[in-house]
Amino acid sequence: MLCAGVILVIFSLTRNNKDTFRIWRKPSDVIQLLLFAVLGMVSVQFTYFYSISLSNAATATVLQYIGPMFVVAFYAIKNRRWPIVSEYASLFLAMIGIFLLVTHGSFDQLAISEAALLWGILSALSLAFYTIQPVGLLRRFSPATVTGWGMLIGGLAFIPFSEPWKFQGSWDFEAFAAFGYIIMFGSVLSFYFFSKSLTRIEASTASLLCSVEPLAAAGVAVVWLGVYFGPMDWLGTVFILVTIILLTLGTKEKKATAQSSS
Image (cartoon, rainbow, N blue to C red; front, side):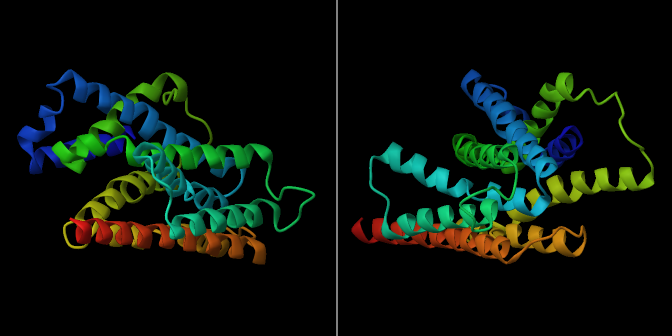
C-alpha cells in the first residue's frame, strides 16, 4: 500500500497538480479521507489477504464479491425502500452460492474453517464500506487523488502492526518479483485500468465486467496454484457471479425508471 500509494500520488500530481493537495484543505474532507484510508483501504486489503491465508485465493475472492449485496442493503435502508425483484433474486442466489462454497452441499460440516468464513464475510463488508464511503470525495476529487492518498495513509497507519522492517521468510528474487507484481498489477494498474474504462463506458458496464474477477481467481488458483475446486465450488461461484450481474441489471433498471418518471 505504501509503494502503490506513492506511485498513485505521483501519478495524480502529473495529471491534477492542484487537485492532489486540495483534498487536505477542508477538515471534513480530511476526516473522510482518513476514514477511507483506515476503515476502507486497510480493512479491505487486510481482511482479503488474511482470508486467503485461511482458505485459498479462489474461495477468498468469491466470498469477497458478496460485498455488493451489503451495498444494496445499505442503500435500501438509507433510502427507505424495498428492494426490487432482481435484488431479492440476487440475495437468494448469493445465499445459495455461499452455502455451496463453504459446505459443498453438506448440512453437517463446513468445507472451509469457521475462521476462513468469518474473515471472508468481513472482507465482503470491507469491500462494501470501501465502495460506499468515498463517494462524496470522488465527486470532488480525482480517483487517483483519493485512492493514492488512501493507500499511502493506510500503509503508514498499518506500519506499527506490520513492522515491515522485520523480514520473514526468504527475500530472494522470486519474492521481490511477487511483491512487485502485487504493487503494480494488483494495486496500481488494476486501479488505473478501471478508472480509464470509466471514461469510455458506463460505470454499470464496468462493474459488470469486473464480476469476472472471482471466476478468473478461481481459474488461476486451480491451474497455476493447484488449488482443488470441486463441482460445488464452481456452482457456488456461478451463483455469486449471477448475483453481481442481476445487481448491475437492477441498477440500470432503477436508473431507467427514474429517468422516465422525471
